[in-house]
Image 1: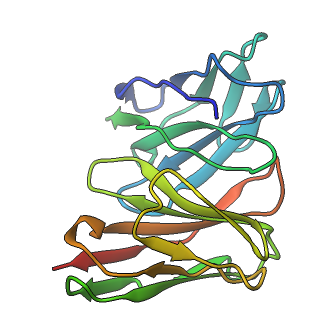
Image 2: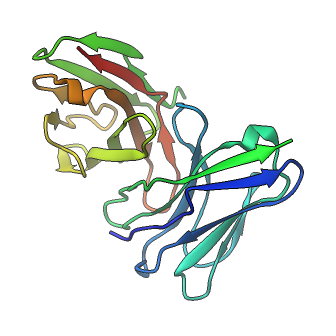
Length: 110
Length: 112
């Protein structure tokens, strides 16, 4: 299963874009990149996912490099409520396993 | 749809006791998983299932058993509770490959 590497923490000013990087250099062709976040000790919340193309939804944008070895989650206008641990995960297609890493603690500052 | 429902929300066990954490989903999802999360740590996969009757081990399976007799239910059994199993347990379900996972709200287990 592919592994991911994320910075342990990041700061972002409220109202600015938050760009969270993720490296997944061993990703295989049929593996998806998923992003989840966890606020306090609640269950993880789905944000977005993609295979090869960039994706956008009402919460965020996902930019995947052409070689698929890294990706960036973009929160376009961060708010204080976006303070959370963000997890970048790569799944193996057949089993659909989600293996969590340690994530990035995003602190949105007023 | 109720989504993914975990019961109980809180539980205190004595060392050596056994218990079953319940997980149910009403979305007809094929894939289900159990995770544990220790304080300050990420989620670690305990067991997972790709369909009724099929289960496999995750990263930290020791001390836990699972079964998947129906699509809806995926119970996690602690055979003989130990203080090291004090954690928050999350259940998740996924419809099919390439779709999002839904998580329950967790069961906070303390073993004394």
